[in-house]
Amino acid sequence: MLHTIDWHGRAAAAVLPNRPFIDGAYVDSLSGETFDCVYPGDGRVLTQVASCNDADVDRAVASARRAFEAGSWSRMAPAERRRILLRFSELILANREELALLETLNVGKPIANAYNGDVVSAASCIAWYAEAIDKVYGEVAATGPDMTTMVVREPLGVVAAVVPWNYPMSMAAWKLGPALATGNSVILKPAEQSPFTALKFGELAIEAGMPPGVLNVVPGLGHIAGRALGLHMDVDCVGFTGSTEVGKYFMQYSGQSNIKRIGLELGGKSPQVVLADCDDLDAAAAGIAAGIFANTGQVCNAGSRLIVDASIRDALLEKIAAQAANYQPGDPLDTATRMGSVVSEEQMSRVLGYIDAGRAEGASALIGGARVRTETGGFFIEPTVFEGVRNDMTIAREEIFGPVLSAITVNGFDEAMAVANDTIYGLSGAVWTGSVKNAHRAAKAIRAGVVWVNCFDRGSMAVPFGGFKQSGFGRDKSLHAMDKYTDLKAMWFAH
Ligand code: NAD
Image (cartoon, rainbow, N blue to C red; front, side):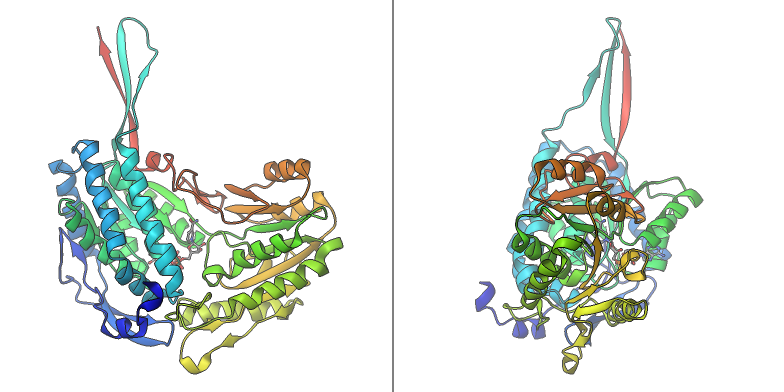
């Protein structure tokens, strides 16, 4: 279906959700304020979206609390929640064309990626937690013959999910799946750049049979709606994905309010280490190019620092440059496009600012380095590879969140590991090597929540994802994610 649809025609006729979804229905915001939603593929304003304020957030939290206390979801038998969540997942897939289009209009990612990737991965995530929830058990502790002691997990109550714009549906699903499956009520706050699919999720949850108030969606600005959720005395937990800077705010909000639980999936500056003994430079080059140019480099675990042994540097860089040709920016609504726009004019300026800093600090652009497709009015940047980068340069230390690779040359294993770990981040890392011994040594040495060996960005719902150091704490995906949205309760029964 993907290739037979007139996506431009669909875009022109699209219905764009732009009001908060609270207590089971779209409602007018109490704030009356709005913000512009811009299509980054051509820079035009698509619609105005409600900018929720403290009063709107209060209303959403009250609805979520009422639903939680009523028990219509929180105390529902897990097998029943499973049934409704599976239906929710099916409805996401049934609305695949509309959701893919809304995602592309919001963030400028290629329609083929939104259709084949984002929608499917969000639906699979919800289904995975649906399937899990009636298959997890509590514990009976070994407290002796005069006692029966059970250890069970209970939902926290009202969870706020505050998410970014790079994978709006997937990032929302990574929170909604475990938080809803475990019986919580959720308030989803999408990034201001990408509210459409989140709002549509609210609608689909009701269609699936979820009781009103269990999933509310409040579009709004970070420093208003996001802050109001962070500081709210009746929000029990925030599941946050976004920048390290804003993650630090959420820790402050928690301390300033009710010590709500916080899970933080933050930024990264992930090393792609290619050792001298790498025996497949073609595979490494393809993995490295995909790892920085996919999703226009707007990926938390993007492999943005290439750490390459001097002995193979020239051969590898040549192959990466050849791979980059596959990622020339194109029309996001064209099904053949592999790299779309960056998300906004602001983000484009930020990335171009880093490119300028790279040049000013003495690195040189082997390929790329400029805005392109300017005539479209959209925000497109070429795939860019810098060589001659030192690890103390701005482009090696700060998260650029764009299609910019910084290549650093090293000599030997020990220097490679030292440079890989010389960062405030610890989300992920990769090593490319033909040596089993070095594969194991590197996997242990790299201080990060995920390490890939001879591959990059592989993922599965069965495997936890999250960071060390200033990349945050707590894990998304896998059964471990359910720990974030539940508390342990010990119950002692004397005989
Ligand atoms: P961001 O931190 O600017 O915004 C994320 C969310 O926080 C948005 O909903 C935003 O509205 C809200 N927000 C912004 N300022 C706020 C404030 N003062 N108070 C409360 N809420 C606020 O991040 P972004 O630009 O949307 O996304 C890019 C960042 O997300 C990158 O740093 C990237 O690495 C990170 N990210 C991490 C992961 C992961 O799993 N670790 C995944 C995707 C993205």
